[in-house]
Image 1 (cartoon, rainbow, N blue to C red):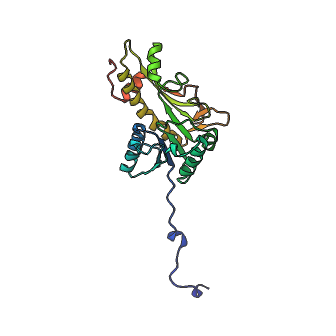
Image 2 (cartoon, rainbow, N blue to C red):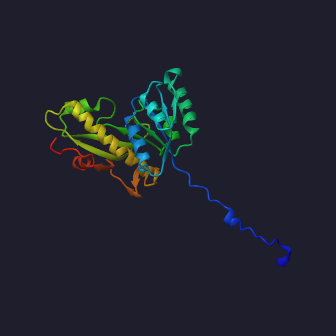
Length: 250
């Protein structure tokens, strides 16, 4: 009977507090200055990173300036000097342990100047992105700007891609084009490529954290469940210049 119960009833549903949804976690790997890291930190500050959070920055060089950028932003900064390890495999195994302590949804390579072992790549397959200063598959490897100018190309640029065992050979997510003028100045070209890096890397990371881009089992990239071409989504020179407020006459 009702008289057998206390007069003040407690609604357990009213006492329940829903846990906040977990933010997607990102770990960024760097080797030096960390300008792309800064672009990602800025995007996060302006809530343009798909609700994600950069939880750690790891550098293979103790003097990498990007570590200061991380500390200034209140992000865990970890130096793991690769020269303290006697093999590439030993370093990568230690790096995996450092990264996995932060339980990331995504690992971002932002100027991380290391060739990764197959075991490392496989551990983060489908959840590791890299940015490369060329319109892949052109100019894989180093010194891309000089090589492009030496070949007399009319277009250069930058690509964000998923990481696979092939150096700079993983499936492309997004590219941004730079028009190469006759007698193009090298430093001016590098500056424009860097601006496009800082433009498209946060976009690619946001797409991943929002679940919009995925790497399928057969190595294809999809955006909103639609397969992308081998070049990924390509942003033209004019569109990138407009986003960056560049003078198209330059």
